[in-house]
Amino acid sequence: MTAGPPSAAPPSAGPLVVLIGPPGAGKSAVGPLLAGRLGVEFTDTDTEVGQAAGKPVGDIFIENGEERFRELERAAVTSVLDDRSELRARGGVVALGSGAVLDSQVQELLSGLPVVYLSADFTTVARRIGLDRPRVVVPGNPRGRLRAMLAERDALYQRLAGLVVQTDDLEPDELAGEISARISEAGPR
Image (tube, rainbow, N blue to C red; front, side):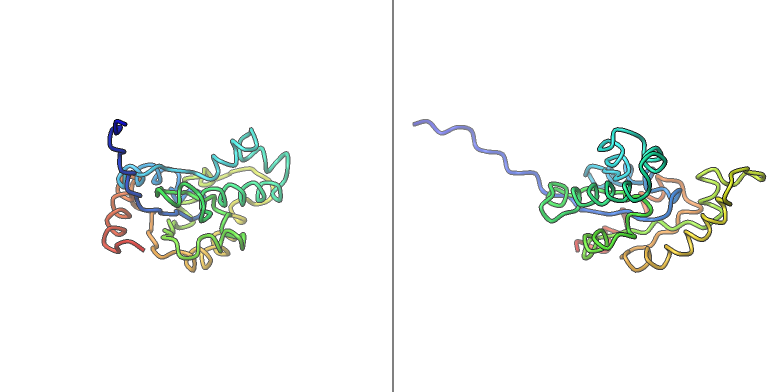
């Protein structure tokens, strides 16, 4: 019997990093850059939700309601962060939708993981999501709702994160470099 070629050793797992924060903080922009620096793949749970539903996230909210969106979001986060997921085994950078952390099951999944809170002030978030124009005419005071949402979620983001990075004055590549350096300094968790 002839021996076959030696089997290749499995690639070593890279780090797993979870990005949380408000809309416009930079999770989707920084995530792929950070993943590239760490040599792992990037996953955006909002993209996963949209693919599962077959439509953009905004349409899910409008057509199916927030409750259905949150169900899909919880399933997406669970599929990538569950103890048995491939991503947990091989590493990666995961950007969670801004409200995913409101779910108690998601909070449990984040326990013990390296979580980075991309923090941004109200004026930065408003500018990045397009609510900085002086006379935005949208019923329901979206700027007021945004301000209330940021105030409400900040303490939760702070509690869940092992690392907080202020994003207001930095470009995505600068942020990816800072996070990568700070993760390297902290060592594996």
